[in-house]
Length: 171
Image 1 (cartoon, rainbow, N blue to C red):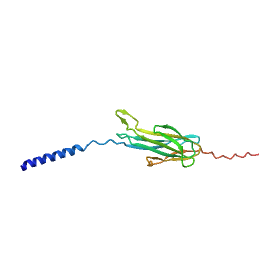
Image 2: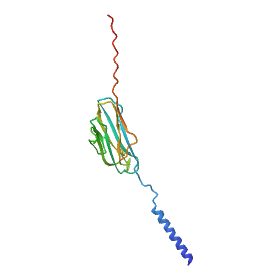
Image 3: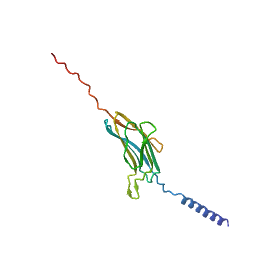
Image 4: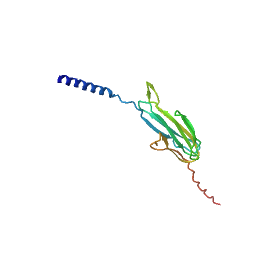
């Protein structure tokens, strides 16, 4: 009888190990892999557009959770949304003379969705005509976090030539 009990105990232990092994799924859980970027236009001159493009890309193997963004744009420009697949809007900021760009919660699709190649990106581009020379710094809040570096659009005034005095003519 003790031999039967030990065999039964071994069988029960084997079933317990098999059920634990079946409960652990070795397949990794798909996850989104997001990258946030903000790019400023190249250097320009007064009276021309400057722009900022803010984007979130997903190179992971799952759609992301909702992504939001808020950006207080530099003052002194009449800002317009040029391109947007995020669901963004402009309204006056609490800081006088500035505009607040707010982008609604949006899901960033994975790059390849069931055999159909998607861009895996949400973005917004804003433009404004810069009348004043100088640097326009811009930092956006993405899901409450700051990007690593500010984007800087530069407006450079043409150099004013120094007048050369006329040579006096002898009389």
